[in-house]
Amino acid sequence: MKIVSGLKPLRKGEKLAVLMPGMGAVATTAIAGVHAVRKKLAQPVGSLTQLGHFLDDGHNHGRLIKDVLPLASFDDLVFGGWDPIPDDVYAAACRARVLNRDHLEPLKAELEAIKPMPAVFDTEWVRRLDGPNVKKGSLREKAEALQADIRGFMEKHRCARGVMVWTGSTEVYAEIGPAHASLEAFEAALDRNDPTIAPSMVYAYAAMKTGLPFMNGAPNLSQDTPALRELAEREGIVTGGKDFKTGQTLMKTTIAPMLHARLLGLDGWFSTNILGNRDGEVLDDAASFKTKEVSKLSVLDSILSPKQHPELYGDIDHKVTIHYYPPRGDNKEGWDAIDLYGWLGYPMQIKVNFQCRDSILAAPLAVDLAILADLAQRAGEKGPQEWLSFFFKSPVTAAGNGAVHDLFQQQTNLFAKLREYADAAAQAAKQAAVG
Image (cartoon, rainbow, N blue to C red):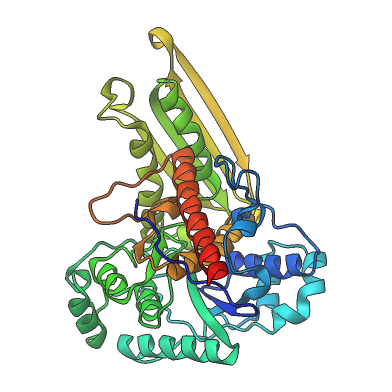
């Protein structure tokens, strides 16, 4: 593991811009939640940066992570973003129906003040949504307009640093092609308006060109393309993704390690979901669902190691389905039927019915990722941050590295990196005291 040689300190009063492409249910829930915590109207339940403790090192044992590491605080965060629907955050949150009105009303003035900038949006990439608040022009012009948005937002709000966290919809399935093969090819593709350049890629490009880390909360093909990996490396930009680990995959990456640890055999795992929010509507399109399906299906092979244990996990029947059901709104329900076997091959079953709230689970991840990406950027990191895999369904890794999906191994790797940063921060403080 690379040793962090320096960690830029925070200056009191410095603001961190948190810019979100897609200001729907997840983004508005995250923004409202931060404002509610600021006003002491709620607790930041589910947030590692706010409630997490160091657990297993002698020096920091039992101390809050935020008391040990120089993290941007909730008071430091300034939110903005883009959306094809022009509603302000209060109106969008009311429309999303994740949070109750009695939670939103005390925050109304703050939320109404946050209005989305015109989005880079294309119905060829997200077919079930549309809206008038969109940028015009070529892909190159849109990329330059996003960069101008970022610079203008940071200047207006006097932000010292910024982070971009994708909280938008799942785009249609795509694979890496010639336009994504190198930065030179990508920029040429922008100039010729290449239809294989997705909006999420334009956002990632604009973020990196303006010095912002890019965290991808959907399974879109963006910062993991060779072109944008090259840009992140060249510009020294932190990246992370993809697809917030919520709902059914959270359960899967918890249960599967138990099966593997106990060497219990697995015949099949059937997963189905119903949800009725904007995400559910988008995933009702087969091309967008394929993107999500690939993200979800990659989990079991990584955790169970079928090559190591072909007799137990070599021929698993693994299926995933998602159904759009409007009456359920943001309250996703996931069913898992797991067919396993134990000693002498005797069959058993596990049934899981997780009645979760999709955006309630995703919102603290979006906020934590913004804060931790900023920490990594100040520490001089660049490229895919594998230690952030804990937050993602389909972690992006450095070239040649396999993704870790086991939630508990991810947690171990996360805390190892946080301890490394804690040591760097302590060393910097010691040097400052001597100086």
